[in-house]
Each structure stands twice: as structure tokens, then as C-alpha cells.
Amino acid sequence: MIKKIAVINDLSGFGKCSLTAAISAVAAMGVQPCPLPTAVLSAQTGYASYYCDDYTDRMGNITEEWRKMNVRFDGIYTGFLSGEHQIRKVLEFLDIFCKDDTFLLVDPVMGDNGSRYPVFTSRMEAEMKVLTERADIITPNLTELCLLTGRDCRLTEAVRNKEEIIAAAEEMAGELMTGKTKETVVTGIRYIEETTGREMMGNLAVTEEGTSFSAFPFIGDSYSGTGDLFASIVAAGRARGDALAQAMELAGVMIGRAIEDAVRDGVPRNDGVEYERYLWMLGEKNRQADAGGSGTGDGV
Image (tube, rainbow, N blue to C red):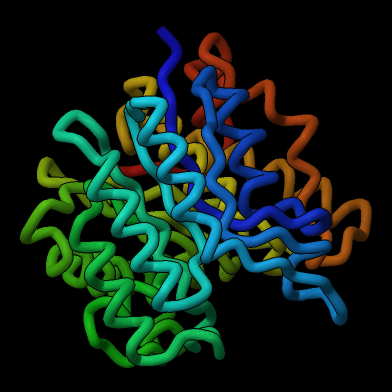
């Protein structure tokens, strides 16, 4: 029986992000994505102009229809949420569909590069903390990790030493794993490699069993949709039984290649990365051979 994941996010016509990225990656991994749209946009919000049809008030209608169908999900994965009311709609969804054997992955999209996104108020931040407390897995970037733990977000700029930044991230992740949350992946850890002077981008997996770190050379820019791809691969990996470190490494390799192509072809950051030609890497028979061919992975 194919595993099913409810994916709660917006749908953008351009930008290769949110549901567009999630549906592609989850399906490529042999898992059925069941999208619950929070909004439909002509293009993601990084573009100069876009149309947005907010679906907050319709999320309950979809939830009710699914309830009447008596559907069950192996996992639930939430991405960007635009307001307090939308977060509460997700919490209501969880009350119905998040069973004892259903995992919840929350990608707590709140900010990046040391700053909170303008849409996120302190009340929204509080609601997001409530949501993350119900998650089995969370995938914050370093800025979001600081927000969730009440740290100064400027830590992301102040610390550039690999060992120091990993230690700080591990400590903060541990603070979020005192309840239901048992696995945290901290994404987008940028640092300077001392031996080469090269800027690197790493991801840190923290579990009750230990930690694992994987890094790749930082190239290009911060592209639209890469975080959505990463969280989607981790979620689908969990559904099909991959270890967290394995899913993290697979995501890093696949996204790294897509970024390299986007940089080579001069793709604007808002347009997203050229991941389509690498979806084959996510298939069941390919993941063992191709995860680990690039980058540096180690236990920490």
C-alpha cells in the first residue's frame, strides 16, 4: 500500500516552491501527496507583482470533506502559513487527522538571514510555537531556530566558525525536543571552511540517538523553493522508512545539483532551481547509490 502524506501549503504558478515542489518530490519518492492548499497565487511573493486567492476560509471545507471520506494519513507536512487564523485551521485539521500512527512534520517558515519575515507578528510566532510543539519532526533554518527558542537572530551573522555554530544549533534544537518532537533538522547553516576558506552550506540532524551534519559548497544565491524541496524529501523519506540522516543527505545532494544548474544557466532566484531533471534521484532504487556522492557528511 502506498503511503499518504497530507501536504498543507500554498500553490504558486511560478517560483517552483510550496505545493509545486512538494507534490513533485513526494510523488517521486513513491509516496502519495494529498495537497490542502492554503492559497493559490499567480507566482510566489518574491515577484514584483502577483495575485493571491487566500484559501483560509475554505480549508475547513476541504477538511470536512476528507473527514467524511474517513481518510487516514501516514504523515502530515505543513509549510508556509500566512496568519494566526490559518495556523488555527491547521491545528483543527490535526485534531481530526493526526492519529497515534501519523507523523507530523512542521517546516516553521518564519524568517531567514537573521530576520523575521514582515508578515510574522509576535502573536503568529506564538501560534507557530504551539504548532511545532505537536510535531514529531521540525525543519527550521537557523533564523527560525533562534525565533523558536527566543534567541537573538543575529547569531546567524555573528558566528561563522563551524564548531561554534553547530554547537549553538545543537543546543537550541535540544531545547525544542523535550516533548513530542524527537527529530530536528536545522537547515541553511553557513560557515567558512577553515582549511580552504570556502563558504559552505550545511544541514544538521538532531535526534535522541545523536547528531549528523552534512555540508556542501555554497554557490549562487538563496533560491525560491529549496526549503520546500528539502522538507518534502525529509517528510517522504520518513513515510517510506528512510533514516533522518539518509533523507537529509539525499535532499542535500539533489538540491545541490539543481542549484548548480540554476547558477550555470543564470536562473533568477525567484524562478527557483532546476530540480526537475534530478527527480529520478529520489526514487526508491536510486537513493542508496546517489545519496553521498557529493558533499561532506559526518556524525557530530
